[in-house]
Length: 475
Ligand SMILES: Nc1ncnc2c1ncn2[C@@H]1O[C@H](COP(=O)(O)OP(=O)(O)OP(=O)(O)O)[C@@H](O)[C@H]1O
Ligand SMILES: [Mg+2]
Image (cartoon, rainbow, N blue to C red; front, top):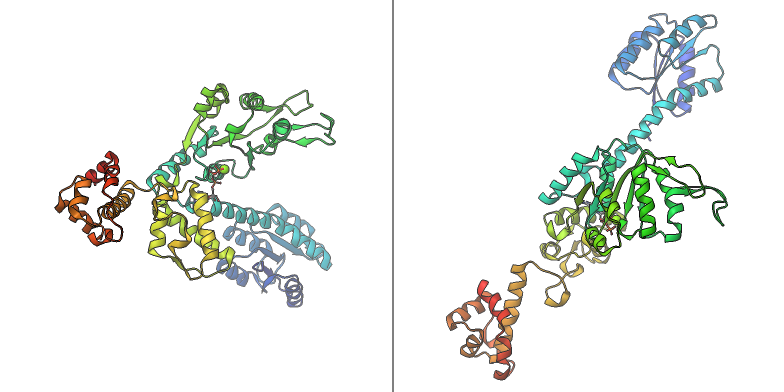
Protein backbone atom coordinates (compact mmCIF):
# COMPACT_ATOMS: atom_id res chain seq x y z
CA UNK A 1 0.00 0.00 0.00
CA UNK A 2 1.11 3.52 -0.67
CA UNK A 3 2.22 5.58 2.32
CA UNK A 4 -0.23 8.12 3.66
CA UNK A 5 0.92 11.72 3.19
CA UNK A 6 1.09 14.05 6.16
CA UNK A 7 1.76 17.78 6.01
CA UNK A 8 3.21 19.26 9.21
CA UNK A 9 3.34 23.02 9.81
CA UNK A 10 5.21 24.47 12.81
CA UNK A 11 7.61 27.37 13.28
CA UNK A 12 9.43 25.52 16.02
CA UNK A 13 12.23 23.88 14.00
CA UNK A 14 13.07 21.45 16.82
CA UNK A 15 9.50 20.19 17.12
CA UNK A 16 9.18 20.03 13.33
CA UNK A 17 12.20 17.73 13.16
CA UNK A 18 10.96 15.59 16.02
CA UNK A 19 7.49 15.21 14.54
CA UNK A 20 8.95 14.35 11.15
CA UNK A 21 10.98 11.58 12.75
CA UNK A 22 8.11 10.23 14.79
CA UNK A 23 5.62 10.20 11.92
CA UNK A 24 8.14 8.70 9.51
CA UNK A 25 8.71 5.96 12.03
CA UNK A 26 4.94 5.42 12.15
CA UNK A 27 5.01 4.77 8.42
CA UNK A 28 3.85 8.09 7.02
CA UNK A 29 5.38 10.13 4.25
CA UNK A 30 6.02 13.53 5.84
CA UNK A 31 6.29 17.00 4.37
CA UNK A 32 7.44 19.58 6.94
CA UNK A 33 6.89 23.34 6.53
CA UNK A 34 7.97 26.13 8.89
CA UNK A 35 5.35 28.68 7.77
CA UNK A 36 1.88 29.11 6.31
CA UNK A 37 2.99 30.14 2.82
CA UNK A 38 5.21 27.15 2.13
CA UNK A 39 2.52 24.86 3.56
CA UNK A 40 -0.13 26.24 1.21
CA UNK A 41 2.31 25.97 -1.66
CA UNK A 42 2.67 22.24 -0.90
CA UNK A 43 -1.08 21.79 -0.47
CA UNK A 44 -1.69 23.31 -3.88
CA UNK A 45 0.76 20.88 -5.48
CA UNK A 46 -0.19 17.63 -3.84
CA UNK A 47 -2.85 15.63 -2.09
CA UNK A 48 -2.37 14.98 1.60
CA UNK A 49 -4.18 12.56 3.85
CA UNK A 50 -3.66 14.62 7.01
CA UNK A 51 -2.48 18.09 8.03
CA UNK A 52 -1.01 18.80 11.47
CA UNK A 53 -0.54 22.49 12.13
CA UNK A 54 0.53 24.69 14.97
CA UNK A 55 -2.13 27.24 15.81
CA UNK A 56 0.23 30.20 16.23
CA UNK A 57 2.87 30.50 13.58
CA UNK A 58 5.58 33.13 13.50
CA UNK A 59 4.61 33.78 9.91
CA UNK A 60 0.93 33.20 9.32
CA UNK A 61 -1.83 31.64 11.31
CA UNK A 62 -2.68 27.94 11.76
CA UNK A 63 -6.38 28.53 11.55
CA UNK A 64 -6.03 30.23 8.17
CA UNK A 65 -3.82 27.36 6.98
CA UNK A 66 -6.54 24.95 7.98
CA UNK A 67 -9.26 26.87 6.22
CA UNK A 68 -7.27 27.28 3.04
CA UNK A 69 -6.14 23.67 2.74
CA UNK A 70 -9.69 22.54 3.38
CA UNK A 71 -10.90 24.86 0.66
CA UNK A 72 -8.41 23.18 -1.67
CA UNK A 73 -9.18 19.65 -0.44
CA UNK A 74 -12.62 19.45 1.14
CA UNK A 75 -12.81 16.86 3.89
CA UNK A 76 -9.06 16.76 4.50
CA UNK A 77 -8.59 16.11 8.25
CA UNK A 78 -6.62 18.76 10.16
CA UNK A 79 -5.12 18.25 13.60
CA UNK A 80 -4.23 21.38 15.64
CA UNK A 81 -1.23 21.81 17.93
CA UNK A 82 -1.58 24.51 20.58
CA UNK A 83 0.62 25.94 23.22
CA UNK A 84 -0.55 25.65 26.78
CA UNK A 85 -3.07 28.40 27.49
CA UNK A 86 -4.58 28.80 24.04
CA UNK A 87 -7.40 26.34 24.58
CA UNK A 88 -10.17 28.77 23.55
CA UNK A 89 -8.57 29.20 20.10
CA UNK A 90 -8.25 25.43 19.84
CA UNK A 91 -11.93 25.05 20.57
CA UNK A 92 -12.60 27.66 17.91
CA UNK A 93 -10.50 25.58 15.49
CA UNK A 94 -12.57 22.50 16.31
CA UNK A 95 -15.71 24.45 15.61
CA UNK A 96 -14.28 25.37 12.23
CA UNK A 97 -13.67 21.74 11.35
CA UNK A 98 -10.42 20.54 12.93
CA UNK A 99 -10.65 16.88 13.92
CA UNK A 100 -8.87 17.51 17.24
CA UNK A 101 -6.16 19.36 19.08
CA UNK A 102 -3.11 18.48 21.10
CA UNK A 103 -1.70 20.74 23.77
CA UNK A 104 2.08 21.06 23.79
CA UNK A 105 3.97 19.34 25.21
CA UNK A 106 2.19 16.12 24.30
CA UNK A 107 2.90 12.44 24.71
CA UNK A 108 3.77 10.34 21.67
CA UNK A 109 0.91 8.05 22.51
CA UNK A 110 -1.65 10.87 22.42
CA UNK A 111 -0.30 11.96 19.09
CA UNK A 112 -0.68 8.44 17.71
CA UNK A 113 -4.24 8.16 19.03
CA UNK A 114 -5.30 11.46 17.47
CA UNK A 115 -3.72 10.58 14.15
CA UNK A 116 -5.54 7.25 14.05
CA UNK A 117 -8.79 9.01 14.90
CA UNK A 118 -8.27 11.62 12.21
CA UNK A 119 -7.52 9.03 9.55
CA UNK A 120 -10.20 6.47 10.41
CA UNK A 121 -13.02 8.05 8.39
CA UNK A 122 -11.02 8.74 5.20
CA UNK A 123 -9.51 5.27 5.39
CA UNK A 124 -12.98 3.78 5.58
CA UNK A 125 -14.18 5.84 2.63
CA UNK A 126 -11.18 4.76 0.60
CA UNK A 127 -11.83 1.12 1.43
CA UNK A 128 -15.45 1.44 0.37
CA UNK A 129 -14.32 3.12 -2.83
CA UNK A 130 -11.87 0.31 -3.48
CA UNK A 131 -14.51 -2.37 -2.91
CA UNK A 132 -16.96 -0.56 -5.14
CA UNK A 133 -14.34 -0.39 -7.83
CA UNK A 134 -13.66 -4.09 -7.42
CA UNK A 135 -17.32 -4.95 -7.66
CA UNK A 136 -17.88 -2.78 -10.69
CA UNK A 137 -14.83 -4.32 -12.33
CA UNK A 138 -16.24 -7.74 -11.67
CA UNK A 139 -19.85 -7.03 -12.47
CA UNK A 140 -20.01 -3.64 -14.13
CA UNK A 141 -21.54 -3.57 -17.58
CA UNK A 142 -18.10 -2.84 -19.07
CA UNK A 143 -16.55 -6.05 -17.92
CA UNK A 144 -19.08 -8.46 -19.26
CA UNK A 145 -18.37 -9.81 -22.71
CA UNK A 146 -21.54 -8.91 -24.55
CA UNK A 147 -20.91 -7.44 -27.95
CA UNK A 148 -23.68 -9.18 -29.88
CA UNK A 149 -26.87 -7.29 -30.70
CA UNK A 150 -28.95 -9.74 -28.60
CA UNK A 151 -26.79 -9.16 -25.52
CA UNK A 152 -26.63 -5.42 -26.12
CA UNK A 153 -30.39 -5.32 -26.19
CA UNK A 154 -30.56 -7.44 -23.03
CA UNK A 155 -28.15 -5.08 -21.25
CA UNK A 156 -30.22 -2.10 -22.34
CA UNK A 157 -33.26 -3.73 -20.79
CA UNK A 158 -31.23 -4.45 -17.67
CA UNK A 159 -30.09 -0.83 -17.47
CA UNK A 160 -33.70 0.32 -17.69
CA UNK A 161 -34.99 -1.91 -14.90
CA UNK A 162 -31.97 -2.30 -12.59
CA UNK A 163 -32.73 0.83 -10.60
CA UNK A 164 -36.38 0.04 -10.03
CA UNK A 165 -37.40 -2.36 -7.30
CA UNK A 166 -39.34 -4.50 -9.76
CA UNK A 167 -39.17 -8.27 -9.48
CA UNK A 168 -37.21 -9.75 -12.35
CA UNK A 169 -37.32 -13.27 -13.71
CA UNK A 170 -34.33 -14.41 -15.75
CA UNK A 171 -34.83 -17.31 -18.08
CA UNK A 172 -32.12 -19.03 -20.04
CA UNK A 173 -30.39 -22.32 -20.64
CA UNK A 174 -27.81 -23.56 -18.19
CA UNK A 175 -24.56 -21.60 -18.15
CA UNK A 176 -25.82 -18.64 -20.18
CA UNK A 177 -24.92 -16.13 -17.46
CA UNK A 178 -28.16 -15.66 -15.52
CA UNK A 179 -26.32 -15.12 -12.26
CA UNK A 180 -23.97 -12.67 -13.95
CA UNK A 181 -26.99 -10.67 -15.09
CA UNK A 182 -28.56 -10.87 -11.63
CA UNK A 183 -25.39 -9.41 -10.10
CA UNK A 184 -25.27 -6.69 -12.71
CA UNK A 185 -28.84 -5.78 -11.79
CA UNK A 186 -27.91 -5.62 -8.12
CA UNK A 187 -24.70 -3.65 -8.65
CA UNK A 188 -26.52 -1.11 -10.79
CA UNK A 189 -29.37 -0.57 -8.37
CA UNK A 190 -29.68 1.68 -5.37
CA UNK A 191 -29.21 -1.45 -3.30
CA UNK A 192 -25.66 -1.92 -4.56
CA UNK A 193 -24.24 -1.17 -1.10
CA UNK A 194 -26.56 -3.79 0.38
CA UNK A 195 -26.05 -7.54 0.24
CA UNK A 196 -26.58 -9.76 -2.80
CA UNK A 197 -27.77 -13.11 -1.49
CA UNK A 198 -27.94 -15.98 -3.99
CA UNK A 199 -30.10 -18.95 -3.04
CA UNK A 200 -29.96 -22.15 -5.03
CA UNK A 201 -33.53 -23.37 -4.61
CA UNK A 202 -32.62 -26.69 -6.19
CA UNK A 203 -30.04 -27.44 -3.50
CA UNK A 204 -32.06 -26.98 -0.31
CA UNK A 205 -33.84 -30.09 1.02
CA UNK A 206 -37.58 -29.53 1.28
CA UNK A 207 -37.61 -30.03 5.06
CA UNK A 208 -35.09 -27.21 5.56
CA UNK A 209 -36.52 -24.71 3.10
CA UNK A 210 -38.63 -22.72 5.47
CA UNK A 211 -36.02 -22.31 8.16
CA UNK A 212 -33.29 -21.56 5.58
CA UNK A 213 -35.33 -18.86 3.87
CA UNK A 214 -37.24 -17.37 6.77
CA UNK A 215 -35.08 -18.32 9.74
CA UNK A 216 -36.12 -19.94 12.99
CA UNK A 217 -36.17 -19.17 16.67
CA UNK A 218 -34.33 -21.16 19.29
CA UNK A 219 -36.35 -24.24 20.21
CA UNK A 220 -38.69 -23.89 17.23
CA UNK A 221 -38.15 -27.56 16.45
CA UNK A 222 -35.98 -30.41 17.67
CA UNK A 223 -32.44 -29.50 16.81
CA UNK A 224 -33.03 -25.74 16.76
CA UNK A 225 -30.47 -25.17 19.49
CA UNK A 226 -30.03 -21.54 18.59
CA UNK A 227 -31.99 -19.05 16.55
CA UNK A 228 -31.04 -18.73 12.90
CA UNK A 229 -31.35 -15.78 10.58
CA UNK A 230 -33.10 -16.64 7.32
CA UNK A 231 -31.81 -15.75 3.87
CA UNK A 232 -34.64 -13.25 3.36
CA UNK A 233 -33.45 -11.29 6.38
CA UNK A 234 -29.81 -11.63 5.36
CA UNK A 235 -30.73 -9.91 2.11
CA UNK A 236 -32.45 -7.03 3.92
CA UNK A 237 -31.61 -3.79 2.13
CA UNK A 238 -30.24 -5.72 -0.83
CA UNK A 239 -31.19 -8.29 -3.43
CA UNK A 240 -32.34 -11.87 -2.91
CA UNK A 241 -31.51 -13.99 -5.94
CA UNK A 242 -33.75 -17.06 -6.06
CA UNK A 243 -31.88 -19.27 -8.50
CA UNK A 244 -33.53 -22.37 -10.03
CA UNK A 245 -36.89 -21.22 -8.73
CA UNK A 246 -38.55 -23.92 -10.82
CA UNK A 247 -37.09 -26.48 -8.42
CA UNK A 248 -38.94 -25.10 -5.41
CA UNK A 249 -41.27 -27.67 -3.83
CA UNK A 250 -45.00 -26.72 -4.02
CA UNK A 251 -45.37 -26.51 -0.24
CA UNK A 252 -42.66 -23.87 -0.15
CA UNK A 253 -44.00 -22.00 -3.17
CA UNK A 254 -47.06 -20.89 -1.26
CA UNK A 255 -44.94 -19.54 1.59
CA UNK A 256 -42.63 -17.68 -0.75
CA UNK A 257 -45.67 -16.21 -2.46
CA UNK A 258 -46.95 -14.89 0.85
CA UNK A 259 -43.55 -13.38 1.68
CA UNK A 260 -43.41 -11.70 -1.72
CA UNK A 261 -46.91 -10.30 -1.33
CA UNK A 262 -46.54 -8.98 2.19
CA UNK A 263 -42.78 -8.27 2.24
CA UNK A 264 -42.81 -9.94 5.62
CA UNK A 265 -41.40 -13.21 6.81
CA UNK A 266 -42.54 -15.41 9.63
CA UNK A 267 -39.60 -17.12 11.28
CA UNK A 268 -40.26 -20.73 12.20
CA UNK A 269 -41.46 -20.72 15.80
CA UNK A 270 -42.30 -16.99 15.77
CA UNK A 271 -45.76 -15.56 16.27
CA UNK A 272 -45.21 -12.21 14.61
CA UNK A 273 -43.89 -11.62 11.13
CA UNK A 274 -40.84 -9.39 10.48
CA UNK A 275 -40.67 -6.76 7.74
CA UNK A 276 -37.97 -7.28 5.15
CA UNK A 277 -36.85 -4.91 2.45
CA UNK A 278 -35.58 -7.06 -0.39
CA UNK A 279 -35.57 -6.88 -4.14
CA UNK A 280 -36.27 -10.24 -5.74
CA UNK A 281 -34.53 -11.55 -8.82
CA UNK A 282 -35.31 -15.10 -9.85
CA UNK A 283 -33.78 -17.39 -12.44
CA UNK A 284 -34.75 -20.61 -14.09
CA UNK A 285 -33.71 -22.76 -17.01
CA UNK A 286 -37.11 -24.43 -17.03
CA UNK A 287 -40.15 -23.39 -18.99
CA UNK A 288 -42.19 -22.12 -16.05
CA UNK A 289 -45.32 -21.59 -18.12
CA UNK A 290 -45.10 -25.26 -18.99
CA UNK A 291 -44.57 -26.13 -15.33
CA UNK A 292 -47.70 -24.15 -14.48
CA UNK A 293 -49.65 -26.15 -17.04
CA UNK A 294 -48.22 -29.37 -15.67
CA UNK A 295 -49.28 -28.31 -12.19
CA UNK A 296 -45.81 -28.33 -10.66
CA UNK A 297 -45.52 -24.55 -10.36
CA UNK A 298 -48.16 -22.30 -8.81
CA UNK A 299 -49.81 -19.98 -11.26
CA UNK A 300 -50.14 -17.12 -8.73
CA UNK A 301 -46.42 -17.33 -7.92
CA UNK A 302 -45.65 -17.45 -11.62
CA UNK A 303 -47.42 -14.13 -12.20
CA UNK A 304 -45.90 -12.61 -9.06
CA UNK A 305 -42.33 -13.26 -10.23
CA UNK A 306 -42.85 -12.62 -13.93
CA UNK A 307 -43.24 -8.85 -13.47
CA UNK A 308 -40.26 -8.29 -15.72
CA UNK A 309 -39.22 -11.40 -17.63
CA UNK A 310 -35.79 -11.25 -19.25
CA UNK A 311 -34.27 -13.93 -21.43
CA UNK A 312 -30.56 -14.62 -21.52
CA UNK A 313 -29.90 -16.03 -25.00
CA UNK A 314 -27.90 -19.23 -25.52
CA UNK A 315 -24.32 -18.81 -26.72
CA UNK A 316 -25.06 -20.29 -30.14
CA UNK A 317 -27.49 -17.41 -30.72
CA UNK A 318 -24.71 -14.86 -30.17
CA UNK A 319 -21.62 -16.28 -31.77
CA UNK A 320 -20.15 -12.77 -32.13
CA UNK A 321 -19.45 -12.90 -28.39
CA UNK A 322 -17.42 -16.10 -28.62
CA UNK A 323 -14.01 -14.57 -29.53
CA UNK A 324 -14.41 -11.95 -26.81
CA UNK A 325 -15.41 -14.48 -24.17
CA UNK A 326 -12.66 -16.85 -25.30
CA UNK A 327 -10.04 -14.10 -24.91
CA UNK A 328 -11.42 -13.19 -21.50
CA UNK A 329 -11.30 -16.78 -20.29
CA UNK A 330 -7.88 -17.26 -21.88
CA UNK A 331 -6.49 -14.35 -19.82
CA UNK A 332 -8.07 -15.72 -16.65
CA UNK A 333 -6.86 -19.27 -17.30
CA UNK A 334 -3.32 -18.16 -18.08
CA UNK A 335 -3.20 -16.35 -14.78
CA UNK A 336 -4.50 -19.39 -12.90
CA UNK A 337 -2.31 -21.90 -14.69
CA UNK A 338 0.77 -19.66 -14.66
CA UNK A 339 1.44 -20.63 -18.29
CA UNK A 340 2.26 -18.57 -21.31
CA UNK A 341 -0.30 -19.04 -24.05
CA UNK A 342 -0.53 -16.33 -26.68
CA UNK A 343 -3.87 -17.14 -28.26
CA UNK A 344 -5.86 -19.41 -30.53
CA UNK A 345 -4.85 -20.62 -33.98
CA UNK A 346 -7.31 -19.61 -36.74
CA UNK A 347 -8.55 -23.22 -36.88
CA UNK A 348 -9.14 -23.26 -33.15
CA UNK A 349 -11.07 -20.00 -33.28
CA UNK A 350 -13.09 -21.34 -36.19
CA UNK A 351 -13.94 -24.40 -34.12
CA UNK A 352 -15.01 -22.27 -31.17
CA UNK A 353 -17.23 -20.26 -33.48
CA UNK A 354 -19.01 -23.24 -35.00
CA UNK A 355 -19.46 -25.56 -32.03
CA UNK A 356 -23.01 -25.48 -30.66
CA UNK A 357 -22.12 -25.06 -26.95
CA UNK A 358 -24.91 -26.93 -25.16
CA UNK A 359 -23.39 -25.83 -21.83
CA UNK A 360 -23.15 -22.24 -23.09
CA UNK A 361 -20.72 -19.71 -21.57
CA UNK A 362 -19.79 -22.00 -18.69
CA UNK A 363 -18.84 -24.77 -21.14
CA UNK A 364 -16.73 -22.31 -23.12
CA UNK A 365 -15.04 -21.18 -19.92
CA UNK A 366 -14.18 -24.75 -18.96
CA UNK A 367 -13.10 -25.66 -22.50
CA UNK A 368 -10.64 -22.77 -22.63
CA UNK A 369 -9.30 -23.54 -19.19
CA UNK A 370 -8.77 -27.19 -20.09
CA UNK A 371 -7.10 -26.26 -23.39
CA UNK A 372 -4.70 -23.90 -21.60
CA UNK A 373 -3.71 -26.61 -19.16
CA UNK A 374 -3.26 -29.25 -21.87
CA UNK A 375 -1.66 -27.08 -24.52
CA UNK A 376 1.93 -28.14 -25.23
CA UNK A 377 2.53 -25.04 -27.37
CA UNK A 378 2.03 -21.34 -26.85
CA UNK A 379 -0.97 -21.35 -29.19
CA UNK A 380 -4.19 -23.25 -28.58
CA UNK A 381 -4.87 -25.60 -31.45
CA UNK A 382 -8.22 -26.95 -32.66
CA UNK A 383 -7.58 -30.50 -31.43
CA UNK A 384 -7.70 -29.27 -27.82
CA UNK A 385 -11.22 -27.93 -28.17
CA UNK A 386 -14.66 -29.52 -28.17
CA UNK A 387 -16.57 -30.08 -31.39
CA UNK A 388 -15.27 -32.05 -34.32
CA UNK A 389 -15.26 -32.47 -38.03
CA UNK A 390 -17.13 -35.77 -37.98
CA UNK A 391 -20.90 -35.75 -38.11
CA UNK A 392 -21.06 -38.07 -35.10
CA UNK A 393 -19.98 -35.66 -32.39
CA UNK A 394 -23.58 -34.70 -31.67
CA UNK A 395 -22.91 -31.03 -32.26
CA UNK A 396 -25.44 -28.96 -34.15
CA UNK A 397 -23.63 -27.09 -36.88
CA UNK A 398 -24.72 -24.16 -38.95
CA UNK A 399 -26.85 -25.42 -41.83
CA UNK A 400 -24.36 -24.51 -44.59
CA UNK A 401 -21.56 -26.32 -42.83
CA UNK A 402 -23.67 -29.38 -42.09
CA UNK A 403 -24.83 -29.46 -45.71
CA UNK A 404 -21.31 -29.22 -47.06
CA UNK A 405 -20.15 -31.98 -44.78
CA UNK A 406 -23.03 -34.19 -45.74
CA UNK A 407 -22.52 -33.51 -49.45
CA UNK A 408 -18.87 -34.49 -49.35
CA UNK A 409 -19.56 -37.68 -47.43
CA UNK A 410 -22.43 -38.54 -49.77
CA UNK A 411 -20.29 -38.03 -52.86
CA UNK A 412 -17.49 -40.17 -51.46
CA UNK A 413 -19.92 -42.95 -50.74
CA UNK A 414 -21.39 -42.74 -54.22
CA UNK A 415 -17.93 -42.96 -55.74
CA UNK A 416 -17.16 -46.00 -53.66
CA UNK A 417 -20.45 -47.68 -54.50
CA UNK A 418 -20.05 -46.99 -58.19
CA UNK A 419 -16.40 -47.96 -58.18
CA UNK A 420 -15.54 -44.53 -59.53
CA UNK A 421 -17.93 -44.87 -62.47
CA UNK A 422 -19.21 -41.34 -63.00
CA UNK A 423 -22.10 -42.34 -65.26
CA UNK A 424 -23.45 -44.68 -62.67
CA UNK A 425 -22.75 -42.37 -59.73
CA UNK A 426 -24.46 -39.40 -61.37
CA UNK A 427 -27.41 -41.59 -62.25
CA UNK A 428 -27.72 -42.70 -58.60
CA UNK A 429 -27.61 -39.09 -57.48
CA UNK A 430 -30.13 -38.02 -60.08
CA UNK A 431 -27.76 -35.46 -61.56
CA UNK A 432 -26.24 -34.82 -64.98
CA UNK A 433 -22.68 -35.97 -65.42
CA UNK A 434 -21.47 -32.39 -65.85
CA UNK A 435 -23.18 -31.32 -62.63
CA UNK A 436 -21.73 -34.28 -60.85
CA UNK A 437 -18.22 -33.45 -61.98
CA UNK A 438 -18.73 -29.91 -60.77
CA UNK A 439 -19.74 -31.18 -57.34
CA UNK A 440 -16.70 -33.43 -57.16
CA UNK A 441 -14.45 -30.51 -58.05
CA UNK A 442 -16.09 -28.36 -55.41
CA UNK A 443 -15.14 -30.89 -52.78
CA UNK A 444 -11.74 -31.68 -54.23
CA UNK A 445 -12.77 -35.27 -54.94
CA UNK A 446 -11.52 -37.43 -57.79
CA UNK A 447 -13.42 -40.33 -59.41
CA UNK A 448 -10.51 -42.58 -58.52
CA UNK A 449 -11.44 -42.18 -54.84
CA UNK A 450 -14.06 -44.84 -55.41
CA UNK A 451 -11.76 -47.30 -57.10
CA UNK A 452 -10.46 -48.70 -53.85
CA UNK A 453 -13.66 -50.58 -53.25
CA UNK A 454 -15.48 -52.73 -55.81
CA UNK A 455 -18.76 -51.44 -57.15
CA UNK A 456 -21.89 -52.54 -55.29
CA UNK A 457 -24.76 -51.51 -57.54
CA UNK A 458 -27.34 -53.30 -55.43
CA UNK A 459 -26.91 -50.81 -52.58
CA UNK A 460 -27.41 -47.87 -54.92
CA UNK A 461 -31.14 -47.72 -54.35
CA UNK A 462 -30.65 -47.10 -50.65
CA UNK A 463 -28.78 -43.94 -51.39
CA UNK A 464 -31.48 -42.35 -53.47
CA UNK A 465 -33.19 -40.87 -50.49
CA UNK A 466 -35.25 -37.75 -50.71
CA UNK A 467 -33.29 -36.19 -47.82
CA UNK A 468 -30.07 -36.45 -49.74
CA UNK A 469 -31.70 -34.96 -52.79
CA UNK A 470 -33.12 -32.06 -50.92
CA UNK A 471 -29.71 -31.22 -49.51
CA UNK A 472 -28.16 -31.32 -52.96
CA UNK A 473 -30.74 -29.18 -54.68
CA UNK A 474 -30.76 -26.34 -52.24
CA UNK A 475 -26.97 -26.31 -52.01
N1 LIG B 1 -21.24 -12.30 -20.56
C1 LIG B 1 -20.33 -12.89 -19.79
N2 LIG B 1 -19.10 -12.37 -19.68
C2 LIG B 1 -18.17 -12.98 -18.92
N3 LIG B 1 -18.38 -14.12 -18.24
C3 LIG B 1 -19.58 -14.68 -18.31
C4 LIG B 1 -20.63 -14.09 -19.07
N4 LIG B 1 -21.73 -14.86 -18.96
C5 LIG B 1 -21.40 -15.88 -18.17
N5 LIG B 1 -20.12 -15.80 -17.75
C6 LIG B 1 -19.42 -16.80 -16.92
O1 LIG B 1 -19.95 -18.07 -17.24
C7 LIG B 1 -20.19 -18.88 -16.10
C8 LIG B 1 -21.66 -19.24 -15.99
O2 LIG B 1 -22.42 -18.08 -15.72
P1 LIG B 1 -23.65 -18.11 -14.68
O3 LIG B 1 -23.31 -18.90 -13.47
O4 LIG B 1 -24.10 -16.72 -14.49
O5 LIG B 1 -24.71 -18.92 -15.56
P2 LIG B 1 -26.17 -19.42 -15.17
O6 LIG B 1 -27.04 -19.09 -16.31
O7 LIG B 1 -26.55 -18.90 -13.84
O8 LIG B 1 -25.96 -20.98 -15.11
P3 LIG B 1 -26.90 -22.12 -14.41
O9 LIG B 1 -28.17 -22.17 -15.19
O10 LIG B 1 -26.10 -23.35 -14.57
O11 LIG B 1 -27.09 -21.69 -13.00
C9 LIG B 1 -19.70 -18.06 -14.92
O12 LIG B 1 -18.40 -18.44 -14.60
C10 LIG B 1 -19.72 -16.63 -15.44
O13 LIG B 1 -18.74 -15.85 -14.81
MG1 LIG C 1 -26.92 -19.98 -12.06
